[in-house]
Length: 112
Image (cartoon, rainbow, N blue to C red):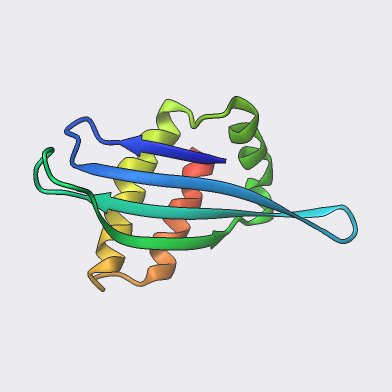
């Protein structure tokens, strides 16, 4: 499921894609593709800053299921994705923080 989130000022976009793999023994593995795009002016095209691939931990499987069932993120989840998670993703793109920190924050979106 692909969700597109845009900041209120129209300068930031997050594509938050959830997918599920069915594993042996009735186990599942959720994955997040977190993509951050920004632009300087609303009249400009978005530029992709980073794409993160995140394996969701088992503790967030239920939250991933709920997002898919609702077909959207909650307001709190959306705020985290376009705010904190996007800020850390941008910092990772600029090599200011480790990428795994940005991946953890992207997954944290589900726990909000």
